[in-house]
Image (cartoon, rainbow, N blue to C red):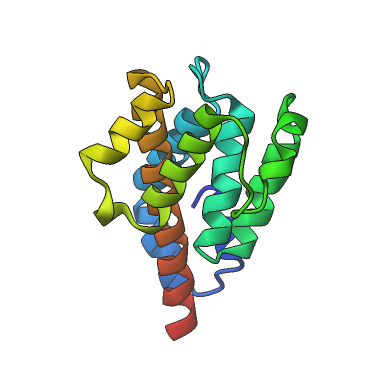
Length: 162
């Protein structure tokens, strides 16, 4: 496992689970590379590192993972421009910036109700001035967060039922 996944899952004393994860070290390495690519890319486009971390905090809260929320909150507060977004840390907080609110609304929808996404949701992003590239970046981030929370939940469940 990667250090982050280990921290999010918690202690895994079961040797069978550790052996399984060791055999899938390639998957864990790809998971870590994906995390870095979506949360701290060299070229973040319109989605700053702080905004990406904010979305991760809100997603973790909405998905009910307090350990993940704490991790991403710490990451958020280490971003140089986090103070501009700190008022939006609670999932129900609303921005008065239409561009930012459209991004937060879309991220919340992709996190909690991805099956409800329609082309109309993309049109709302366009109407708020979100670029094509940032729409793709946002979708990548939401997809990764959904994957990560499910991976961590699955590993915790494996440990709980052993």
